[in-house]
Length: 264
Image (tube, rainbow, N blue to C red; front, side, top):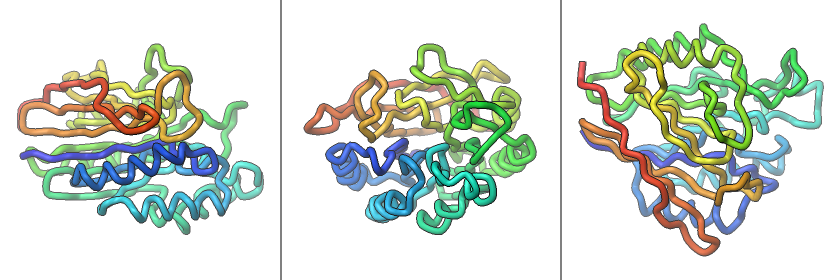
């Protein structure tokens, strides 16, 4: 069974890289993915104008699309809304659920888990938190996918800390969640947040679950050019290709070849 995903992330409408976002839109259509997946931070400050711009861009992407929330997708400057209804604008204007989001296709199954919070009991609210009940629901749903189907968990923050990235996710209960997903046979945990791409084996269980991070399509670069991921797979391997923005076009950049676990 073969397939293709396009993973986009951290467009930060309000601070988007207009040229890169426009070119990514056209190239994604040309790539003809089975699913276009966005791993959070579609806005910069959670303003209505930003959500409307993001929604217009997302609606122009090839269907089907799958979007999870990021820490910038809260009403950043409205503390009352951040506490009482952090995802209301995202769900209303983007049209994707903030919790227990799921996609099932012929070649891929994706489940979304929320790692962003409107507020939390620590100083830096941009860091990640994961609920283990939601984790277990997602893991059991993915475990039940038919043999050969690519099993993907999508969230905003990397669950396991990446060495050398410019910022950290610092996800509370992240490693415990990563172990649950690995033991459920999840192939990929796709994330954004750090604005640089990576693909590494999660050092848990059989080490055939992989953490894959996506770059940004915003002006908020952190030492790496704007980029997104093209993800192709067959029965034996997953190939992650970073599509890197040169300022004029996207070109193929770094490539990772990730062995898949044996069926069953």
